[in-house]
Length: 294
Image 1 (cartoon, rainbow, N blue to C red):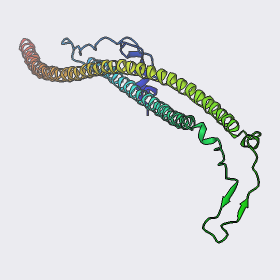
Image 2 (cartoon, helix red, strand yellow):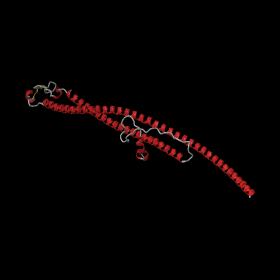
Image 3 (cartoon, helix red, strand yellow):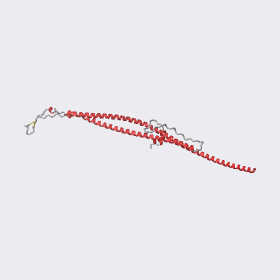
Image 4 (cartoon, rainbow, N blue to C red):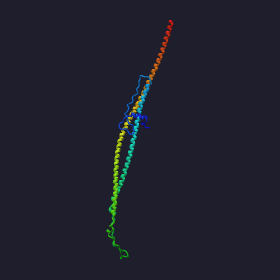
């Protein structure tokens, strides 16, 4: 159970000391620290038990105030540590996701650039058809039995007429230019995406730096809380010791007063007995005197 919502926590919020810096979110507002509890005062001119009860009630109030302050400080310190841990985990997750996106974008961009580079290195001459080999019009067969025979081949058309309507190089060049434009557009879009991710990465780095500065400030606040907690514990210990000493002194004084009262009672009883004896003797003497006179 959160002590800040209990009776002790509500009482502590009235007496919580002020700290340097802003309090963490969710923590109750700090108030000026109460003055140190006064030591238990005792008097020596009374022998009643009401004074002892009043002194004990004052000691209880001081102890409860110090204890409530300790509970409040512990609760605020726990809330501060939990908020710091949660913010650090969220920022680390965002930073890891951004790094993964940047790495993926760089890998995709390098693949597209290598593909475009390979297409640019393809020579144009490899895509063009080679000129045909001009065959001979007659082929003599000197080794056969028909050495005197002559084989006639039909005449071929000029090479310029054959390749007049064929332009494969132009088609290949247009396809390659189109692919190059597409790859260039993709690379440009990827570069823009990488630039955007770099901008986000820079913003994330600035957020990390701000978080580091905030973490240092919160560490300073935590040290202040710890110092205030130690001070409150010392005050509580001093209060308890003073209360214990006051109780011991009051008990000793009560014993002294009780012994004095018993001694006075005994003395009074002895004096009363002596007085009764004296009165009895005087009465006897008076009766004897009256009897003699009669």
